[in-house]
Length: 296
Image (cartoon, rainbow, N blue to C red; front, side, top):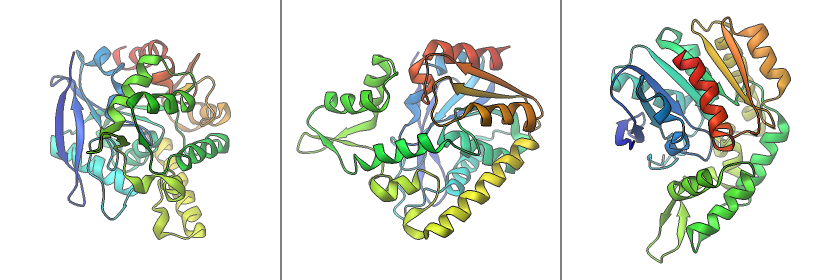
């Protein structure tokens, strides 16, 4: 099964790249995490494409989606893009699945449009993140501010270090779709350079780092955290919370709070042999957990 490549209008005059895996059934939108792109879901999408209209989206600044010349990579811009895409496609009701950054975007979207959700899947993401994982991600981003690689294989080595549990096939796929070749023959990341280095680390938290002071950035993060918890309290749809058993981003305590105390109708799936990037670390376990939820 091969997806169809789409260009979809977003906000701020940008267009986003998406992979459409099927055209029949209830829509299912898949939103990746920071530094990933739509192909992150390649192992999962075919397992549900016969039952849903599956579309995997690349966020602005990622993959083959447009870069924003104004560097508006905050949560609000990503949520606005998601709203624009779903409106353009005419989706009045859908299942929304988000991983990491995409999970937080999905939660904020749910707070604005709960009536549009037939189901929500939150993958290793939460209103409050474990600082061990966020620190690790910021360090990884800072190490590769503007990398150029002689071969795709060189970047595979970087990914294997950053995703130590991921399958070799997932590493090769992520490298292949993350890079573009320059005229000099070297390979560079497709992700906007504004997302890398110190500013990129700030942006990875969903805040427009170059424009905000540390105090303003902390205040905005606190407000987004409040909005996410409030959205979860009012979710009208069945919700699956997925956590990698070895995740350093989503703590067991926060996952339990989400499912047992906050979300009205929620199920927790802890996927073994997986860290933060659940779908690349244990594709079979991830597909089984989410498949059981969305396919019944």
